[in-house]
Length: 362
Ligand code: SAH
Ligand code: SF4
Image (cartoon, rainbow, N blue to C red; front, side, top):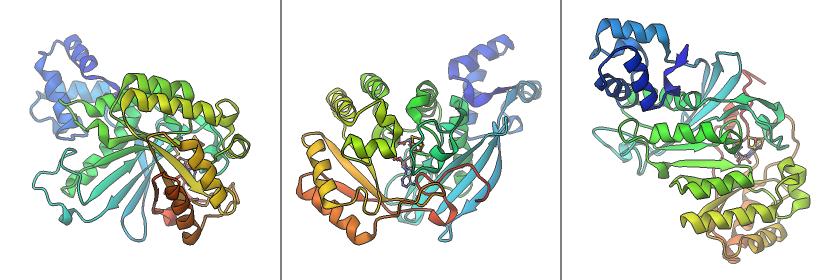
């Protein structure tokens, strides 16, 4: 059965035409799905019973089952394990920052869900990942398959539906769950287009962030498309010798090629690039490495997001402590490169960056 979230608005319109329904029905269904966040045909009470019946017989509203919901001990982070119809497992994580009472809004929507309180949703683009980064739990699992655009969209809809019941909304979407979004380029972009549709969910382009391990041709393609979506590059090392040990993709695309693609991106979009850096004790957190990194990034409109490494079963590097992290940040900033040290979230439920492995329990 076709997944309803896999359809573009015009594909839905074509389907309804085949069903001999008037054109405005497609719009009603689109609005029901993406504005009212309905998740089953029965909820479309503005449609005739036979049409709802036809939808139920021909369209699937849920591409997976929720296998487990896990909340962190502080209640601010929730991880969901989804089982896809073919048995593959993917995960999504919601991170709450601030209290919605800090930023009350009588009618929460993706548009006004931002401000003092944020609801950042981290979603998957693939089951597993082919890139094999050594410190990443998904990389340790290996590649299973690409997700369809609808399977990506559905992760957002499930959380949007859940938050709506609490009078809240998703405010930011990051493609930092399982998988490499640029390895599944078409479906990832199709999911953004669907969620971005002003007649549907209307989620602003600037509130998406794509994180990539550094696939150079796709970075250039993305630059050419001039989307307003934020771009983050997982760098983690300042020279090829150390990077290739952590990120095998560096055999194919060297740091200087990634840098050149980033310069092209900034030139095309006038947008800043974020570099991600998992701080690993004694490996990439020394002032010497920070200086080397600053030299690589000099002149590029960018920002470094450093996060102490999260523990994973298959890698025995240790997280950098706070003091060393601050020294790293200060060294970078003295060399003119802005840096933020990110808080680790959801570690107690293995929901931190790179901890998603699609396992029910370890
Ligand atoms: N495949 C994409 C997006 C998913 S990973 C990418 O690699 O960018 C999201 C981020 O988590 C990446 O920056 C990745 O390098 C980082 N990451 C992976 N494993 C990690 C770990 N164990 N600790 C901290 N960050 C990690
Ligand atoms: Fe894949 Fe990103 Fe993990 Fe590397 S860090 S294995 S690219 S998910």
